[in-house]
Every structure is written in C-alpha cells, then in structure tokens.
Image (cartoon, rainbow, N blue to C red; front, side, top):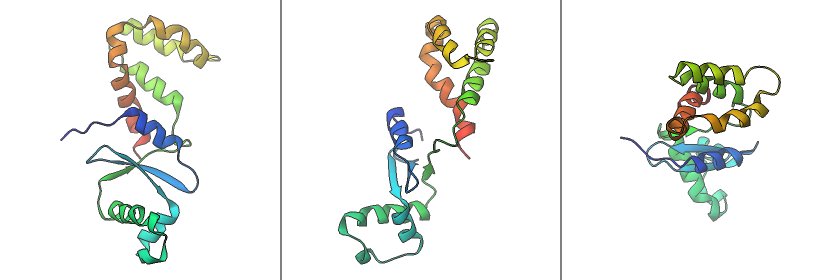
Length: 145
C-alpha cells in the first residue's frame, strides 16, 4: 500500500526537532508527529497517565503506540543530513550522460552550492518534473538509518 506524504510536513517535522523533541513519520497514515523526550520516557517506563497533565495524555498514548508497533520512522535530525551526498546521488541518478557529467562537475570544488543556482535553470523540464522523486530516492539511503 502506498501512502501520500507531504514534503512540507517532513521538512517542518525536521525543523521543529530539538534536544527535547523528535519527529516521526507514521508509515500507515503519512502523518508526521512530534514527541517530547519526556513523553517517550513516560511510555518506555509505563508511567501512569495521571502523573502527567491531561494535555499530555494523548501524546503519551501515541508514544506507547510508537514503541509497540513498527509504524513509525524517526525523521533525521540536522546532524544526519549530508547535503553534498544528496546532491551527488541525485546527479549520478540522471540517465542522460552529458547532463549527468555537467551536474557532477558543477557540484565539485569551491563554490559548488553557489554554482548550483546557475545550472538549475538549464535542467530540462521533463527532469525538473521528476526531480523531487530523484532527490527523495537520492536522499532515502542517507536518512533511513
């Protein structure tokens, strides 16, 4: 079964993570959820809900579900993402030899990220349509650890 996931939800989930809060993707619904470390610890230690404010009860129940099922995938934090590797895997995934070579050359050396804004407009429109899928495929092995 295929689920639809909004890229914006993934990005927001990754942005809102902190030392005290983590984000997860529900693999059955496609929803991105955030759980605090306190809520996760409460679920791990099976602490009584009555020991917490009522507004946290749903989150602690959710944390328990996360621990009991394999329906949740932790989103990577800012330290797990290597932008260069994602760009490189994307460039290498392009089928057209000349374009692949140009893209690979463009990301090497000093100023590669700045130069990227120069070559992006020259990518053929049919590749631009698929670029989101290419980027997700390129990033997936690097973020699903």
